[in-house]
Amino acid sequence: MTLKDGQGRKHDYLRISVTDRCNLRCVYCMGDEGIEQAAHESILSYEDILQVVTAGAELGISKIRITGGEPLVRKDVVELIRMIASVPGIRDLAMTTNGTLLPRYAPGLKQAGLNRVNISLDTLQPDKYRKITRCGKLEDALNGIETALRHNLHPVKLNTVLIKGVNDDEVVDFLQLARGKPLHIRFIEYMQIGDHDHFYSNHYLPLSFIEATAKKAGLPLSPIPLPGGAGPAESYSIPGGKGTIGLIHPISKHFCSSCNRLRLTAEGSLKACLYWQDEQPVQPVLNDKKALQELIRKVLSGKPVEHQMAAGGNCGTVNPGAMRSMSKTGG
Ligand code: SAM
Ligand code: SF4
Image (cartoon, rainbow, N blue to C red):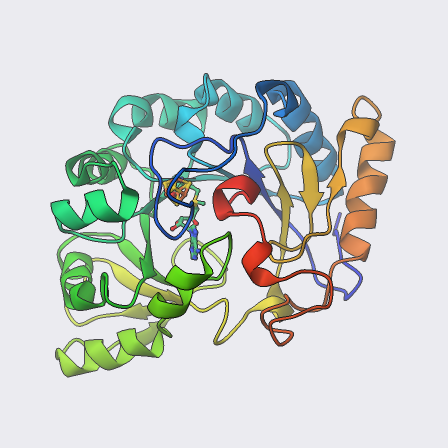
């Protein structure tokens, strides 16, 4: 079955945030004090999440990504992976994580049916890692990456948010990392999400910076088909690279026309677009698969043509700076 939105775009991808909690507090994701956390009772149970996945899979959802917050801080997340992996129709099961807890969980995740991971890493310098994450240890994230490679959670992708004045001096180091290891490093444009406008306005840098820096360093980027299937990243090889480079430009070259994603927040709301506030709670239709499927169709039928930043920064309903942080919605 094919699930389409109101614009005729095929939707086969559901991103599920399993928690708004995190063991780090990245500067571009949360304010100094972290986030106001949802009450435990308002977080969707694994059984409820499974209902949404099963209803979605019957409509045509075949790819699932588990995210957060930090998904590995939620108790028994390996069990959720096992439950989702056994749903008929789910062909690709991935997770986005900061990687710091992967040394403990990667073997169980792989065994439970997780196919692959994206690991967030914005710097290769220990002091800077602590500053960006406000509390993390680079060594933990690097161990997580090595464990993911060892346990075959391929393709292992790294998510690197380009932050002007913070990690723009490390672009060549990241390119060298992708030369030496089978890692797919995806530079992501910094988005104005959450309540930190001031930091954003001083630190946004378009990804054309990566292409220019790579060329200057004698490591020019050559376009290639995407590793691991379609997605919003433009993919490139570099000379002599075991890995690849990806560029994700949600702002300067947005990819709304090919968007295939639906999101489920930790508190159980379906969202058709990360950047708009519109959402519908699933709780009223749980235990009624037909009604749940109707709700999925309804949310998709109202999906906007493009996100508000693409629509000129103001959609008339929300102020981008007032939008919930990525850790609350699920990045
Ligand atoms: N905790 C996990 C992690 O860090 O990978 C998963 C959740 S995190 C919200 C998902 C992704 O969102 C991360 O790769 C993070 O770098 C990205 N992210 C968070 N805030 C962002 C922002 N303002 N702009 C761009 N990417 C952002
Ligand atoms: Fe946590 Fe991920 Fe947000 Fe960093 S980006 S604070 S690791 S949820």
